[in-house]
Image (cartoon, rainbow, N blue to C red; front, top):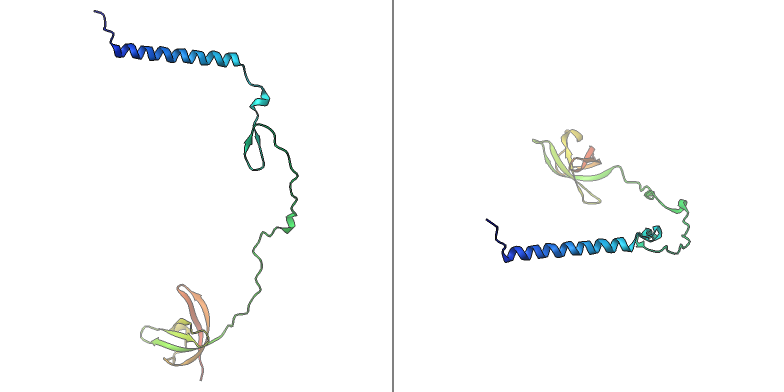
Amino acid sequence: MAKRITSGKREREKLKQTKREEKLKKKEERLNKGSRSFEEMLAYVDENGLIHSTPQDIMPKEEIDASEILVSVPKQTEIEQPTEFNGLVEHFNSSKGYGFIIDTESKEKYFFHISAAPEEIAEGDKVIFEIERGTRGMNAVRISIIK
């Protein structure tokens, strides 16, 4: 029994045949055209990274003195910060062992622990203290009461 040839099969066979013919034509054109010369295959890159088929005019580059280029951060002039501050004990919790001092000049609040203060410290006392950076900000240390 022979297989039937339907119209769909005929159309597919025609498409395949035309594609084969086009492929052969392209192949013959490539063979007839010949290979390109080495000069045609070269690509030139300019100073901005763009690709060109012809070499670009080489312009003289601007000379820059390497010693003029600043690589590091400029040095800051050291401003002397006061080491001792005057303040007032705003809050003190003796049962928990901490308190806060307000600086009289800047009105900044500084935390302090009882271990950095004299035992007889109380709210409202005028004090002299130094500051150090703690885990949660600046802390008052080396506190002494002004009499």
